[in-house]
Amino acid sequence: MFIKTQLCSQPLTSISTSRRRASMAIHEVPLSSGPKAMPCIAMGTAAFPWPSTFDDTRDAILQAIKIGYRHFDTASVYSSEWPLGEAVAEALRLGFIASRDELFITSKLWIRDAHSHLVLPALQKSLRSLQLEYLDLYLIHFPISAKPEGPPLPILEDELMPLDISSVWAAMEECQTMGLTKSIGVSNFSIKKIEKLLSTATIPPVANQVEVNPLFQQKKLREFCKAKGIQLCAYSPLGARGTAWGQDWVMECEILQQIAKAKGKTLPQICLRWVYEQGDCVIVKSFNEKRLMENLDILDWELNEEERESISRIPQRRGNQSTFIVSENGPYKSIEELWDDEI
Image: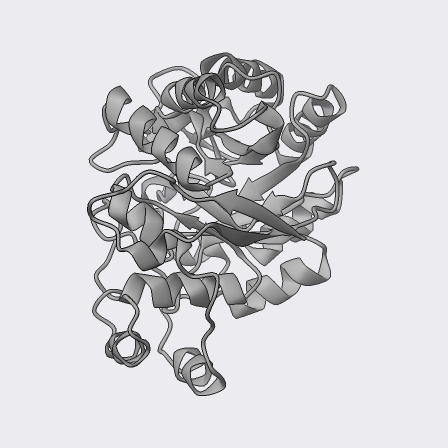
């Protein structure tokens, strides 16, 4: 299945004529539960330094809708739900989209709200911020909880708590049954943690959002999720340079630089195309108009077998270790325990 996305019809000073094509087809994947397929390119809305200004976030999202993005990834902790909601309302007013149903909106349950009695109120709060009646996908942000009291961040070590996945997931299922979200899923879950969830779930998760890029390819996790009907969604496809956890490893990789030069593409385009070819939903993140366009310009070409083989041989290492939820006195006492040695 494909979605036809109309690109900007007005001249953009920094974008070449060759990139202002009449239309582009973004592949969509059906989800194991829920009525709507997921577009496989999403715009991420978490900005660093965190958070970005309201106007910058809203304006970037509105521009993204105008040029063809239809999937948007947010979270309560990102402080981007409100500007995303305003951008959607403005896009409807300006006629960039005919209805909210044209968009696929993902948000996430923050760890302070990862308690069975707080799931529904947290989702309802997100919907109010977004000015929406429903989400397309609601994810558990991390496989951990924290004491509910206090601001979203920082999370102190003595506030970390084990996630009661059975009761929290039951509350997520109830949200889907109520129609407040069309589908439910997880984020930053290892194979072992998904297996534990599946052992009690009535509605299986449709997606797992994790770090994926050519230097952390997640082959084992992808194979497992595919076998279970779980769609992998890839954040940090460029290594998250500029974030608190980001690294330069991806952008400085010589193999990727050589492929980009040979193909006449940018290194980010090589990374995004590689993730896209894995069948993952790739979450791109830029508020820059030119790069928003470039990130869509991965649809009418492909990597060849030699290039794919070269990328498959790149040494692997995890970038986002999420050390802020690792503590000697918490549920996860080491990085290895948090990720179940999937590092």
